[in-house]
Image (cartoon, rainbow, N blue to C red; front, side):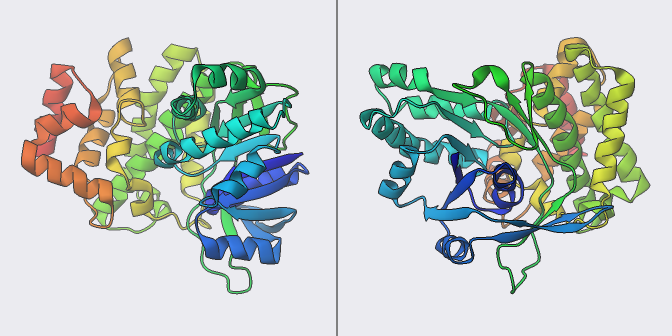
Length: 380
């Protein structure tokens, strides 16, 4: 089996690419960083440091790489592979879509009618469905119909903390990951035979797991980053070691968790244990997870379908407490980082248009009482 994976960064190499290789799949990475591409093609392997209570070094082999700017090379691969995955970040999916459309059209013309499945492994709700929409914008109705018959667009939920790695001169591709990983996919969306991939879990109720991860891991991670930045620490593990921060992070996850319990009938005790597991992961002493890395891109994180506003909307839907989630929205609006394009844009918009317009523009919130609370706490 052959796979084309877009994104040879830490997540691509340390998470998705590794699971594919562990499953005996021949993986070609597509990326724009030529140095990295050359290293992959020259070394044909790299190490993954799995850190935790049983730390170990695992070697990933059977790999190749191509520059994703080389359209002809990428299109040739798309014509032939059985699986396409991505770990490029939600914002890059739109950029990637036209190239994928060209590749899928070329696959049709070549007469390859074998099933092909595409899985976007991104921190977003139904990222593959979003990518499919962008791809179809570049196809005729006839092409869409024919591609729909043989190409599965499979949504997934991914969860693994992969922080920046200290450079190893003996293995420049080496990456560090936590022991825990979770890759859950919608089994109803595959075309042809479902691939057997180590660490990939199948479900017919993906949204429950997508929102569980988004509302717990992603929400809690972000709150820990914002609170850690406020007190001047560098790492998430330092932030979560401060009891007051840990309690606020936990309280926020409990608010978002109450939405999950209402919406998906999660067992409260089981979900409480899941929250404790997340807190333990944040405290992993072997992970150097920078608060600025976790807190970056506040505009994306304030959007209606992301980790702050989406659970907040859930609390409004079910009439649940939301004090800590509102605080999270306020902290995102207050996030400042001159090296973060979105943080600079957000700050500039607030200066020019005022905080109320910023709340309405970026969050899509319409509840006047919640907006009033956000404005009041922001001014404090």
